Length: 122
Image 1 (tube, one colour):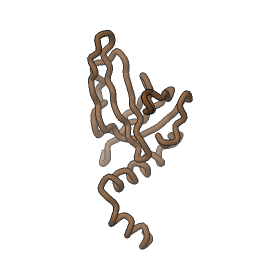
Image 2: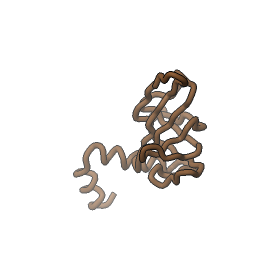
Image 3: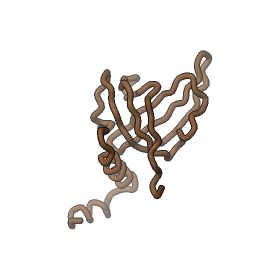
């Protein structure tokens, strides 16, 4: 590690360090793009950690919503017609694939295909 990167790492906030680590982890997974590089109206593949998972009971269709974070940005994941999904929980690493949409200025993938990834130390 160079002196410059050592100093930068020492002065970085905890969020910046976590973001850098997420970008590094995501770069190791073959075929995945950084969330910041995903284009809307195209299929995309991304990996990261789930920051939050929420059940949104709606009048017509229940949904499970999650926020995937990879250090470059966030991607909202929405599973329609689901109340729970085993393994989909905050802190879990996941790889997702699906059509990227933009809703209210945020990237969203509805009913993504997903693969649970090993946790750190697994």
